[in-house]
Amino acid sequence: MMKNRSLFSSLGWLLLSSTVVIACSPTSNTSSSPATQSANLTISAAASLKNGMEEIKSLYQQEKPHIKLTYNFGSSGSLQRQIEQGAPVDVFISAATNKMDILEKQGLLLDNTRKNWLKNEIVLIVPKEKATEIKNFPDLSSKPIRKIAMGEPKSVPAGQYAKQVLTTLKIFEQVKPKAVFARDVRQALNYVETGNVDAGIVYLSDAKSSSQVKIIATAPADSHSPVVYPIAVVKSTKNVRAAQDLIDFLFSNRAKTVFENQGFKLAEEG
Image (cartoon, rainbow, N blue to C red; front, side):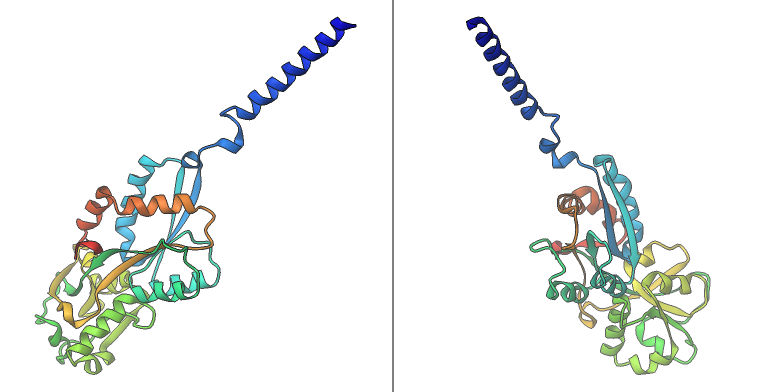
């Protein structure tokens, strides 16, 4: 009888030990590291960031092969409205602070994730192979200039900045009838590239990306609001850690080099 009790006692301790070992095993699902979990991130970004963000995708996935990046490019105003309507977005990058302000006031951004990331400049461009007498912004009001491409001021930040420049120079009302409003800055660039307009007002980064246009002038810094690109994690994200990791990478030296080569500067560098 004593032997049987001893045997049952030994078996009991063996089972208990096995349970403890299994529970503490590093292969348990409850202890998997967030750093190695896969995630699909959707990034809604201003159209002017397209070239740089595509390059970032390959660089980032060298470091984080388990993270898939999906981009949604468009005018910042359109992207802002999509987020308001519940679009599944993890990270938002706007070409204007006011679009980010709207989302922040509505409580749609994750607290303490918003940062100013990049800066840009506003330039006047013309088709490279087309003869033109334009030398500066005031020349846009001259009669030979019939069509001028720019973003739609109500929804496209590049269009808002363009309107500010023309208003400061006191020529907006003269230029407005000539304006060909685009859905985003990339479409405005395309209008100039194809020679469908006489000139266009776009970001420096977009002008530098094209071999088919020529930069005529840079808008004075005091003629428009600073062109700043804020970035933030959208509150509805289910991938907070992965989204924040991506933002951290965008502030790294590797990412900085990519965007500086395209005409951007980091906002914090003044």
